[in-house]
Length: 125
Length: 125
DNA sequence: TAAATTAACAGTAATAATTCTCATTATTGA
DNA sequence: TCAATAATGAGAATTATTACTGTTAATTTA
Image (tube, rainbow over all chains, first blue to last red; front, side):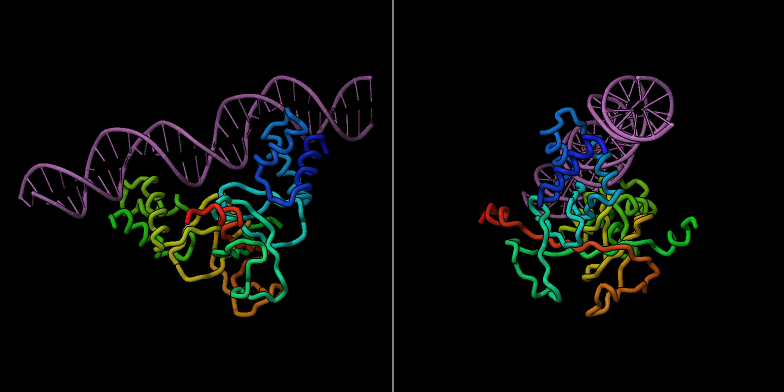
């Protein structure tokens, strides 16, 4: 755990937004002006592998990261790209979803992930 | 509707997979050997704007496209990146989701999208 | 039909997010 | 402390995608 890695983790845990690598780079530079963008990318990868942060599998052109490890749902703005947490109540059905968070909801993505039959078979045992 | 655009649409409708722009380029080249990748990107954009195909908002580094316009759910292999359709039965709850499709499910992404309060306000009327 | 206009094309250059390389610096363990 | 190991900063390389440039094909109009 280097100084750089600690700063990145602390900054990410401070915010409720879901910053991109470059945004985290800007945040970290306030504390370590000589930190490089490559270091930020490398440490976000390491921290994600260690399970200390989550790399968000959201759509959009840039990766986003989350210091909140609890399972929750996101909502993304189709105009500016920001990602917020989405409040879900139990047993909510799709037509009942309303606009608690001020968004005007236009759509949603539900994507499962896992290993396909071919890759499961090919896996080393 | 040019020859290039028609071939792209037909090839995409033929398959049940969810090919990337480059994969569609390879498919189209079998019929039009001189087609360029830029043309494929341009026409995928146009077809998507016209609502004839869907640009998938799935995670991963590359965009994927779908000729099936009906609303459905996807499953992505975390190893090879392929995207398949996921069969959903009504009122299925998360712990009940089983492996009809041969995948070993590891997780899921649920992301809503829409306009955030700020962008809604900034919108031209 | 033929000229004029428009739209789309192929090929290539530019862009942007991310990853890689490598010499240098920091951290760790005996 | 000092060697061994791991991480860093800076910048180059990579990759998916978009934009640009002249050319060609399609469509419209006279």
